[in-house]
Structure formats: structure tokens, C-alpha cells
Length: 102
Length: 162
Image 1 (cartoon, each protein chain N blue to C red):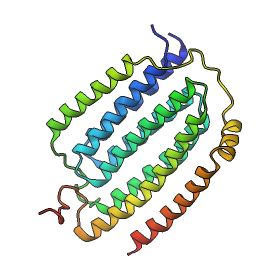
Image 2: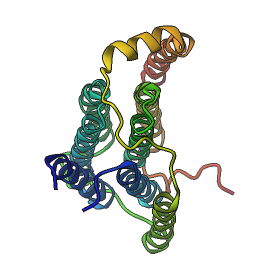
Image 3: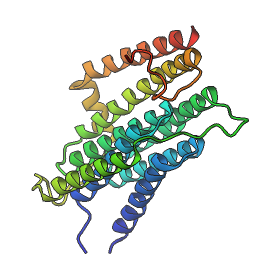
Image 4: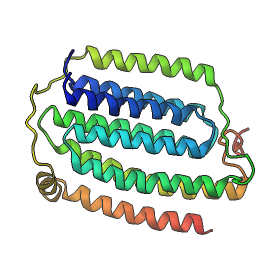
């Protein structure tokens, strides 16, 4: 049995990133797309902290905190935009909002 | 197999499985709750990596804040009383193939790269060193984050008010 190392965490975050990407691509609802973005941000966080730990360099945790703060700001702004879209189009499905399309 | 390994695999399984359900289940509310479980598993992984403070912040900000905000978004933009809180999917097959290939590529790169790392990292106290670093080397980033949060607050309020 190999001991848990950096690679294990990187694999977990790769899987998380891919699942988030899958959610962003396939989901129609804008809020589900936001959930995919949150998954991707978490994958990045796991990477930051894992690299920080296995190099004895705790600035990785600080970057993870910055990412969390930016994610909070992003979620608030995105939700406000989604509410406005719902007010104007009566839907939040990203494939139906195609006013700019030719 | 040490207890560390057992806990790691437990949290890893929770994270990955609930992330999978987050992006595949059709009901948006259930999906949001699975996202909550994913974030919880990730917080467990942070604890295993020796960063307890980030794990607590993850619990408070993500699970207590962002997931609730997302649930509010679901509540305000869907017809809760009818059965219309499901989400459609599109391009399922090409997305599965593409993302599967991408995930395989990522995992291959990650496992085949010789990462520069220390084999037995010394567990250090987190909070004091984090605070010192934040207030010395990263103080400009810290202040900018405060301004960003303020702008996001004002912007979100004025966007949603109209």
C-alpha cells in the first residue's frame, strides 16, 4: 500500500475539476453552471493547499483563502445577474437566452 | 493501512461521489445539497492537509454562505410549487467523451510528473503564521480583497434592486 502523498490529492482535484467542467458544459440552468464553477474553485483550492503542505510553504493556504473570498463575491454578483435575467426573460436556462444571437 | 489513509479515502470518496451527483442529478435542490456534501468532503481533505483554518473558513463561507445563496437563487428563479425545479441537460454524449478524455489526460500528467516535494513535511501551527504572512507580505492583497468584497456587496445590491 502506497502512503498518501501529493499525487493522491492532485488526482482528487483533477477529478473534481473535470466534474465541474462537465457540469458547466452540460447543465442548462444558470445556477447549476454556478455550482460547476464552485467545484472548479474547490479543485484549485485542494491543489494550492496540497502543494503548500508538501513543500512546507504555508502561503498555499493563504491563496486558498483568497480564492474562497473571491468565490463568495462571485456567487453574490452572479446570483444578482441571474435574478435580473429571470426578471427579463422569465427563464434562467442559458440556452434560451440568445437575444444577441443572429 | 494507517488511520490517515482510511480517513483520506473516506473523505475522497465523499467528495468525488457527491460531486458526481451534483453534476448529474436532475433536481436542482438535491444537487445543491450534494454540492454541500462535496464542500464538506473538501473541508475534510483540508484538515488532512494540516490547514485547519481554511477548513473552518470553507465550512462557514461555502456551506453557510454560498450554498445558501445558491438555494436562494433556486427559490427565486424557479416554480417551487410545481415540479419545475429540474434542469435540462444538453450535449451529454460529446461532453462526457470530451471531459472523460480531459480527466484522463490530467490524471496521466499528474501521476507521471516528478513533483518537487518533501517526503515528510513537518506539521506546523497554522493560524499564527497565516496571520503574520497575511499582515506582512500579503497586506496589499488583503486590503484589495476587502475592497472587492465591498464592491461586490454594493454591486449585487444595486443589480438585484432594479
